[in-house]
Length: 116
Image (cartoon, rainbow, N blue to C red; front, side, top):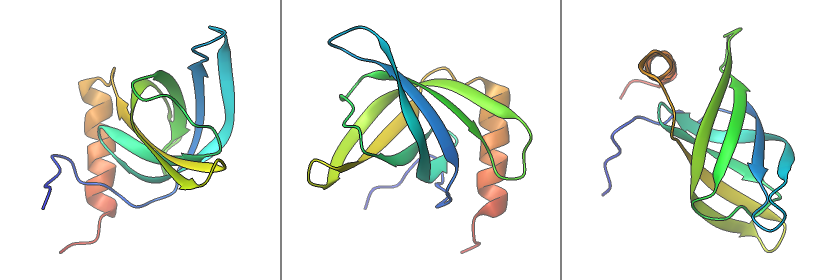
């Protein structure tokens, strides 16, 4: 069984995501999506856009009960089609997270997670 380094919180968080279209090199906006879970180092979203593996994305989101807007750069590390040609689960790993942001997100995940 795979053991993750960071605990994941199965919670929905509204996420605004933009990316650079690899063909046109234009910045594309994806409508607001929702995370299925998140951790201190990344999140999983469901979207109707199939993003390219290893592509760079920009994320903006608020954590539950926090007034702070988090703006992070990340890369796509997993793409899974969940409804043929309609919806995709996209695994995203933060690439520019600073220590303070990492600590804030980690603290939230730990405080909100059910104890085992």
